[in-house]
Image 1 (cartoon, rainbow, N blue to C red):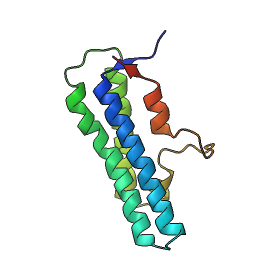
Image 2 (cartoon, rainbow, N blue to C red):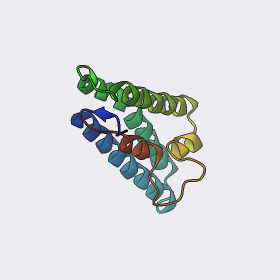
Image 3 (spheres, rainbow, N blue to C red):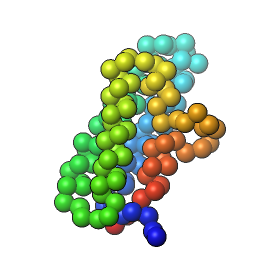
Image 4 (cartoon, rainbow, N blue to C red):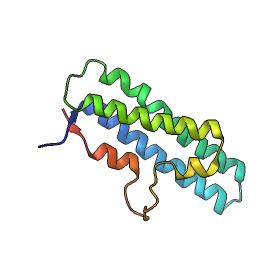
Length: 124
């Protein structure tokens, strides 16, 4: 059995968001560890969560007319990421924001949860 299929535009959008999130995380780490800027660190992690939270809504337009076997699962997954990002934002927890997308057994260089999720799908 192959991977579930979703529109290429949705995969591209999700990959772009995943890249943006990695960049925001790197900027957050730099702000905290190199500049000692806790406010900047919080801003970058907040932006990470906002990016993740918006992804499901942004992808909804692309997925609205799609009729493939993976659209339901892809949509549900994005909505779950958005829900968790929204929870981190509402709790205002820097720890939760930073740990979002990273399982306990994560090692540097591994894919995060969003990247692994995207890799479960292929273009329709």
